[in-house]
View (cartoon, rainbow, N blue to C red):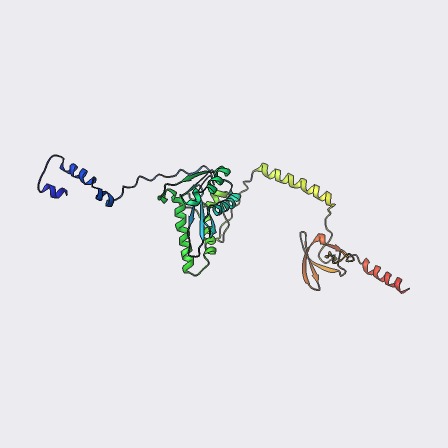
Length: 314
């Protein structure tokens, strides 16, 4: 338009006037490029784990399943819940299960799905004291953390599908490895930020254990356990077992009727002992029992049996 006008006419400010003219064109406005995006706004890191989380439904998959994905903004820990339903009731049920482990967050961010805008979901958020944020409609970038995790989860599911594997098992394997792998942004694994410890996996590593447990907590634990032991031992009249390897013992048996004895009539040999457990050599094989379920055979039962037999003979 500018080139065409310049070939015929000219006046001061011609380029500006032409730009104003075509910017007001209705048809051009409908087909022109959209407004350039605003500079990105980064979310500040939370002050602690599981304070601010994001939620989104991934699916449906060809199997009819949907995956509720929860991401902790601080640790990048991911929780998932697989179900056929995406109702508000099912979302609340899944969140209750997760919150029973991690506790209530301060806030949760979701899209504008009907299940997240329902009265059931909002009522649960109010009862739990959780501030509920909705992202701008049709702008998933506003919930970018959970959207990025959705892409990674779908990649793992597609690979499992191509390789003919159970995608549910592969999803669990992926989550385990993701949670124990240092995150590129934070530099540490989600497990370390959420739980304060590394998850043990099959990769070999040099163990470096630090005794960083609070001394007061350790002393209180030892004191209460000691008090409980003294009380329990006194109440049960507990004594150290005198059963050793090589002893002949009687084994406590299940009473079939009122005439059944507490211990079986056939003595057996102790062939092993570790702590409170003993291994017994019986005609039916080797059995493991607690030391309280056996007692040393003193050889008096056989004498008593013989004396009764002689009495009956007379």
